[in-house]
Length: 412
Ligand SMILES: Nc1ncnc2c1ncn2[C@@H]1O[C@H](COP(=O)(O)OP(=O)(O)O)[C@@H](O)[C@H]1O
Ligand SMILES: [Mg+2]
Image (cartoon, rainbow, N blue to C red; front, side, top):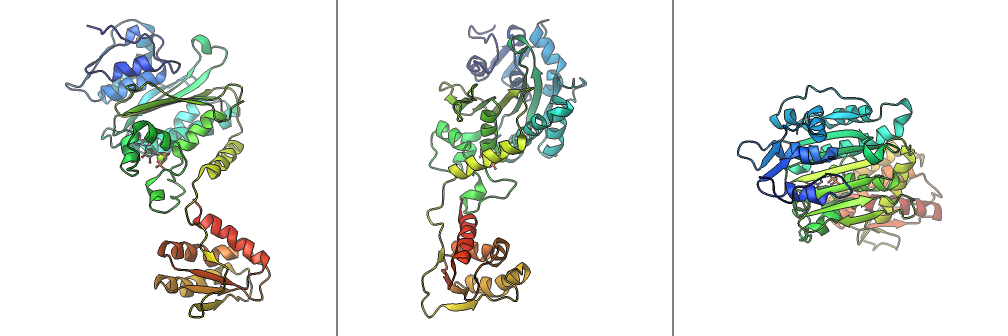
């Protein structure tokens, strides 16, 4: 028996009825009664269907309805049963569903799918955007979901219905793991509310590495969801994130009047038992990828919280007991010598928690790379161990170079 509230469609415009249906127990889905169903609906169905056995999902697939044919065409049954879909991709149209195995290389799948979605030679920027989004979402499944089965991905260029004039690329990545709020709450214990946690996940520099006082590696700096949400706004797209306890829809302002677009939490109780992310962008409007990344980097800088103490160099005169090091290399540009000096002299002192004073007497200017080699590591070490670093006789050109180094070495 089909519940009265069975959803009639699954579209980003109004995702709640379908999500509500997936949250019921047991789930009874008559796919043939849902029309249209967008790709994310099928990806979510496939991900939940993998639970199998006496699992909570029952999908009716035997009606000759359009949505059931669509499901067959993208290999829903195969993915549910853990088989490789026999269906071929149709470049520029559909990419069959695929499981994201936790050990597989995320780059290869992201590359393949983005090429299939945007095969035109002049669609380079769209391809790179899709690659970025897919790769980050795959990495999140692998790194954070804790779903032993990994996730499921599906993608299409939606040219149907009202999208005939303006086709949309839609990709979705879904897992049935712990969910974003739980994952974040394990590291940010103050985030007790699921909505607050989901909101926080879209901020730059949310990662475990950052919590411990690092800026995170280049690969994993808590930037994935932040970049994806900023891209959504800049390409005129939409982003649905549904997870345990909270869901939200981010929509770009169609006239780009509001650079922050609009973000709305879906009603309380509209959630997903895992993490569902659906990203959508116009298929044929090119946005210069490189300049988009620059804009997002700038926004990240604006929104990155500064550490309470990010000034550690002290330009006042040091107490006489502090050991003085004269900074005098044959050439002030000799970065290798500077690094050797840092390793052999500065770092051992700091490691013993002995303050140091660097005397720049006689040097009127030096390059950023010299200063970087000399002080980047020692300064971070000094900050972490709370050992003072004094600077003496720094002329204005030297001082400003040192201050810039300090800004990025200790900044967020
Ligand atoms: N699929 C997922 N399952 C569980 N938690 C997730 C998932 N995706 C993201 N998260 C949570 O959201 C946080 C932010 O993700 P992201 O912006 O990609 O940064 P990063 O992956 O570098 O930590 C992650 O650190 C993780 O706690
Ligand atoms: Mg990530």
